[in-house]
Image 1 (cartoon, rainbow, N blue to C red):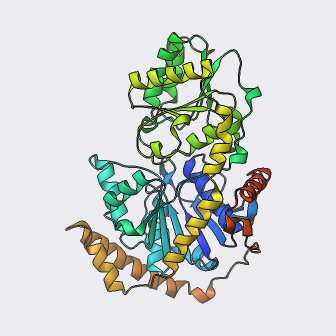
Image 2 (image 1 turned 90 degrees about the vertical axis):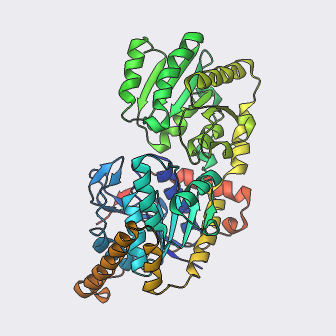
Image 3 (image 1 turned 60 degrees about the vertical axis):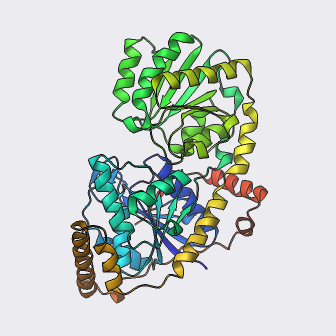
Length: 462
């Protein structure tokens, strides 16, 4: 079947990141499978309104206030009127939310279920259970997913974490990993220096991404190995710490801070290096690790979360999330590169055979087939599930759902569905037979076409 799908998340281009890339690539492949896909996210600077990306992918940039780390202020009900208008205009059948910290995602799932639409949620992150922020976030996630059609996680570790946090039935949770367009991350040995061992870091510079570890490890490695240099791309609150470290140890010529870069420029930075360093403290999958291996880099990373599931052992050197362990693992990687004990030239072809967006799209399509067959339950059954979320929280959740139903009735009276224009759909593509067959040769051809089209053709519409 062909579906009208709405991807909803606070995290999308032009903001760089793994979730952003996942949504774009998955949406593009679903369009290639013949589905109609739109994306709903918040405005980014002057990018407000409706934009079209390549493949006819329509993006709604909704003007909402950003609270923290690109997540909008949780308004609960104020998003409903504009969301309802978009969903009716686009004749959406399935709403697919991404990111457990995305307010737009969680609110869209709640309102879509009130409207009787099918819903899917993809979790891309890992969270704890003890700190106040995690406790509150987990409670909200449990509320939102109490009436979800199906949940997708990007790794088995992520699945275990999400099932516990949201008290889900494991049967309703599937594992579908991220992927990369391998043709966009081809190695280029001519770009890497023959005089230095170059270590690449591309990450948001936040504490949970290991920025503090990075600040401590770099001086140790530079002191031991005079032929090692670092290229660090990314921005965040810990960027100032890296600048101070560079000044303190006089490493201006050996530590290059590139700042934030666009996703299409990631490959140009990676091919300059020999080793990719990923000092994160928590990670559900780590798409950047696959991209680095595809570029022919030996990966040094902490053994946390779902990272051990991503790459085979000959591509990766694992470390515990500590300064001494990460230093030793990086020195081991430098030794392997200097002695040429590991052949990184074969990594690209191996990654190309392991990960592909055509496979992710087909598996996601199977999830849509599952939720499309689920019958809508009576309102009272839905309220019972929300009531079971806690002694006090359950009553609050039921109250929110009741208000949501009343708001829907008010909106139906104020703006009748019959008075909302239906948009003219972008011509659907013929179903791509190679995606259905999942042939690697054809997949490479499709990914090559994606590379040629790029993201540079973004245009504004009325």
